[in-house]
Length: 282
Image (tube, rainbow, N blue to C red; front, side):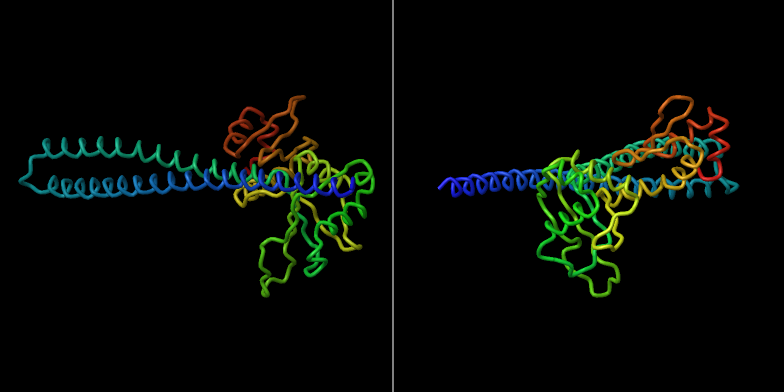
């Protein structure tokens, strides 16, 4: 009887967890849809403004042609051209603001997607058809094979385990990745830290790789730091890639961090040694 009550309790907890997860996913999708609507409206406004700008340029060209004719009134025509230049400049300012707004929307969607993936571990290199119906236990075997101390120290409950993409592509020569969703981000970080310290992770002797799971845009942003990261690492600046795509390093006893290359480029102009180190790649 006690065993039956425990099963019922765990079942209810499982239902409650799945309900919370689905509700969070629904909220994320609704937020993404709203951002998409803002993005579309901004694009429409931008198209109208670009059309107005082209019309202004066309009109200015016509006036310039008139100015070049002998019987025209130069001063009056030149004033018209100057007026059009001013109007074009005014029209360009909202365009810049719209581009900034679009970028902010894209950054928000990327941040939302990265937040949803934050507790995920991506496993790369496990052969296809390898225990496809039992991926959760497959991950348990990977942990036992590579991190036996963590198996003893941590009672990890995998929330979700699946291949991605869902459908297998017969033309694809490499195995699909496996996504493991952990309950907490710190559990994921501890496993990834152990993987980095071990250097070589295997599954039944086959080399595999464990990494964090990011959006496509964030992965690209992290890749853009790789060359700079290698140079700094060779010079013992202790570089690190922080979540989600921020470069951190130590210089003159201080830790500096940068979210993009432009800010780093501004900083190295004040550090001649660092400038010489990075001028060829930044």
